[in-house]
Length: 441
Image 1 (cartoon, rainbow, N blue to C red):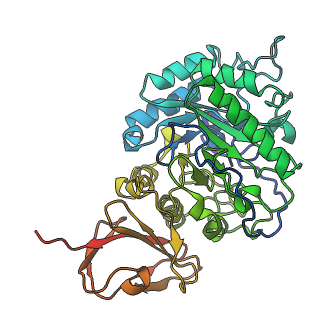
Image 2: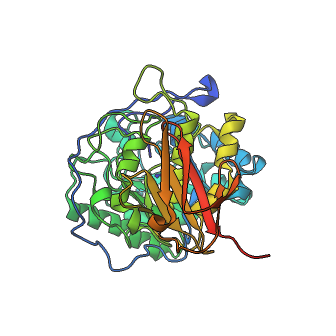
Image 3: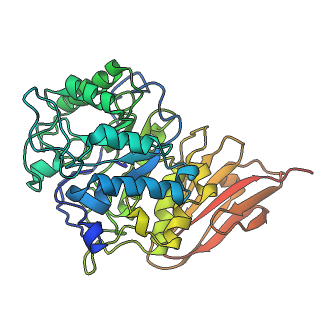
């Protein structure tokens, strides 16, 4: 679906919203073996591009809503909606134009060029439009000879950045690009080659002197365990995709072997959650909140409970929050969830402490220490039936003898905590709490 979010282009993830006001999702899976333990740290440096992303990037990406039909008008409308809806003020700043924005051939001098029919004023003018609204501008490319859509045969040409890294980076800088999504899309998953190719563009971006968020996806179309899950890409990418693409479904039944639903991505989270931190963020792909699914398939769209789980758990994990829904057409429920400031505050907490599973809970309870000394706690019900989930303060690591107050971040309800905290959690839902000491007035 991207991260990006935040993936691969085995087929268009969306049809033309401007005409149909609906999303058509076409997916092809890829094989992946079971993950293994980390054996390599790819860089001693933890920051790929200095001066960007002290907290997880937030924004919007065009792919899920427009696929290869993306045009300047749609991007401008998305930017305007971010402002008018209050999403910009809630933290969503990046407007990212995904695959298929370019002509299928470069200029005679080898430069990339925007499709003049869909982007008649060019990408610099579009970036200026976005910047004028207090937002930042993002664009898409691939380290291979062809982009994901070109490899999939859904878009003509061969205009990837392989062999053009320095020139493309200069082009992006001249256009005012603030965010580059760089998507692998190749069955050649040789790790040394991946490291070289992603590092080459990182160095080219650095050489421009422009602070660009560098979002890499090393997982697309690889036949083995996704490198983003197995290896730590800190220092090479500002954010890196951790799994295969996220789809608007709960569980697609393939685990790491292809298409992944929200539960399946969260099942992998304990392997990569500890690698995140200021300037380098693990990216479990874009938000499927408000993204239409396909009836009768394994990705029918998320239920309200499943949307709360994705948004809440992505925030607990300090993941990038990159919306993929059709912003001008979102309903109030989607808008309220995406702009929930209490939950966003967890995602954007400057301490950036890693989220961890509480031992002995079977992955049902996660915790994360926040900068004010409080703790975010998620009670996650991955099962298909409602369940009571409880945890003692001792198991959370909270000192005994202190009074604590727990606030439910969905409802705002405050509860004084004795020795334990718990809730009845609906199937596929997540209760997100913020627990802190009761302070004397």
